[in-house]
Length: 423
Image (cartoon, rainbow, N blue to C red; front, side):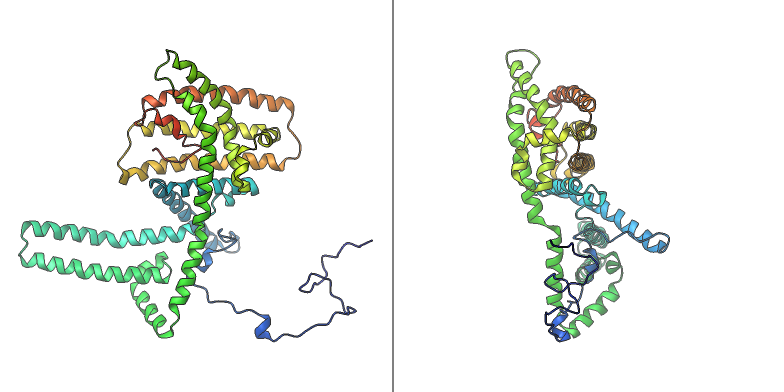
């Protein structure tokens, strides 16, 4: 019989308990060999805490200033993250990256159930936000002066004032470009953009010391690796096409009729009846796929139906949140803005779809962590209420083709389950 191992025992490198009577021999290693060298950290090394998450929240009683700084940083990172997702969602093909991020957030909540898992890139987002904000603020006066110089050339291109203004614009452009490069080289924080003299001194010190290019390359690789671009893009592509396989045939039948009469209305009714169960189970199939990162999880309907019995009310809340937040977004498809202004519309889409994804992940994770099924009254209450609610949603969905700029194409978009964009 093997006795259980005491957790307080010290262990050697092989995991075996050590004692004074042990016959094992010990080898003394030089300090230089036993302790690996730690590379010098860069200006944004503090961003990578806990696998891409923010550092732990400091105690507000012991460190009130640190707690306030943590809250400000987290709030700025959250705003930066939402705006960044909205900008990327307005770009075709790149919006698969946004869908992958939403699925990753949903899967993180489903696995852990904690709110901080809902924002996988929240530690990196403040740095991205500060870079965008700093560049925009420094380019703003340059744009104003450039427009003034252009107006001056139209009025009197040969005057001394026009030549002087052109010289000022050129000089300022060179100085701002150099300052922005040095601010990015120092790490791209807000303080780096506000202290150009310190940036110049830092650059001179780095030039004298040498080895900056190697350290910068290491920091850039770590920063790009923290974004996990390939993972999120591939997750979004698989999630999109897997959901499309469920939605395509019912939606194709649903879009057959243009009006509520004629023979094609029979196909529309059949498509609507098929859409009701698909819309009921597909959000949780996507949550299963995102939490396990398995494409086959998108088609394990039997397992998802079994899990529904463990948390039926939570699943009902998730379904209601998903489609209640999605339905008003069809109004924004009545008139689409130009491509360069589309980010404002996608911002509304992200603000509506992101919470729905998190609620769905929470409901799926709650069902996974509950070992017993809910009472049959609770299960049937959720089923009987979910069906009519989805039927009403499908009924209203039919009329969105008459207000959307894409016509019947609006019915195939399903922004709550596919790409979070209005096109």
